Length: 252
Image (tube, rainbow, N blue to C red; front, top):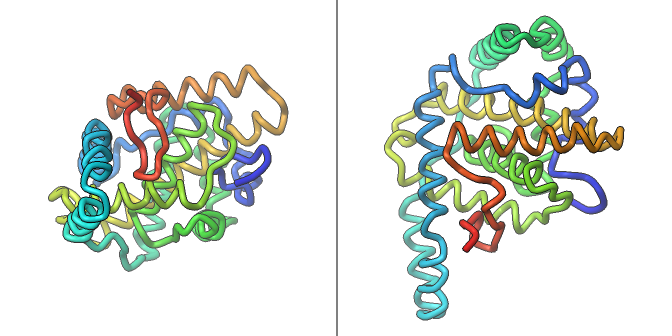
């Protein structure tokens, strides 16, 4: 995106004004059936990023042949990341999300009302489509979530479609090679994706508001919150990641 816009759900920002900025930074995944699988996906992403440099060096040494081989491995590791949506699952995710917000001292009732009035998932899908992401694909939901938190942590205001799609490819390859993910059914994939989307929206609104208000103190607070969240939950230091043509890699 160009200008001062971050990879945020800009069109969605107004629908979560009822959410507290200080609460939005702390939403987590506990309490959801797919929490264990979610944690394993994040761990797999972390492990994948620990060895990017060697793959990049191999491609450089082997030229086109090495690149083709790497592409073949990624294709072989691919798995279906799309799912058939169920309205019942969406209602359950929204209810559990509001309950979680309420349990952490947030405005659960306000968020529940906002989710009833607006289709957050559809608006999220409209926004991310410009980056080649789409609703109904758990890999795309995780891609957006990682991109958002990396951008907030590093105060990166602009990313390209190509950069987002490099992370998308990284996520798809990781999921296809992970048994915890390949064993999920449609309902579980949907739950995982929609939890990621709701967290994305809540966190993005807080940062969008801070930027709009030129609130440097809140921006730093949210940047530190994103860094701490990934460090505590995934053992990943977002400030030590670089965004490359192959996705995220550990800074050398």
